[in-house]
Amino acid sequence: MATGRTHRPATRSRGIPEATVARLPLYLRALTALSERSVPTVSSEELAAAAGVNSAKLRKDFSYLGSYGTRGVGYDVEYLVYQISRELGLTQDWPVAIVGIGNLGAALANYGGFASRGFRVAALIDADPAMAGTPVAGIAVQHTDDLDRIISENGVSIGVITTPPGAAQQVCDRLVAAGVTSILNFAPTVLSVPDGVDVRKVDLSIELQILAFHEQRKAGEEAAADGRAPVDTDADEAPPMRATPTGRKGPDGDMPAVMPA
Image (tube, rainbow, N blue to C red; front, side, top):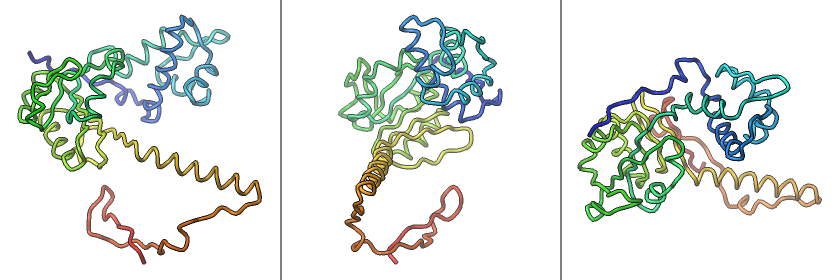
């Protein structure tokens, strides 16, 4: 039975900046941990430290919610949990469909944290006919041929893509055509979507590359502190690089390719 569409959270209509919206889940995670320990109130400094932000930024963020705390007492933990959950739309049930039930898709389907945070895995979809009917996390996998019907019957507005990169855009297009308006993309590719569709990208390799950058910087700083010059093993091998237009269009116009000079 179709559940119908549910309204989206009112964060944008209330003028809450996107940067603040991105930090609300951090506050909610910290507050939930405090709630589980039966902590009744928390100061802005304590909560900011737990969330990994500075207290001035936290107080500014909470002002958008109309929550200012009480001087000398702090913030009521349970009320803030409710307030942030409501603002993020987590006080209602969000059916989610995962497309691409390989190792990553199956792991996400088995993740127990979705239900406690307002999300319900309503459907698992895969292009492999051999997967059809196979139970994963207690849910039978369905074939992509039935994607439109699956999305409609389950009232899905959030889709999770865990396919290989070559299939991701086609899956994205089909999800959008079926009425999905928010997509979480784990495929290592950039998706093109129409206005009104939100995409969040999760790329573990990029996060690891950023960590590698910081590790390299720390190694260089340690070498400088010890009076040793950092060694660039590729300095004599890598040719200089120049940007050459390729004619491909990106969101801001021509997308240059970097090629050896």
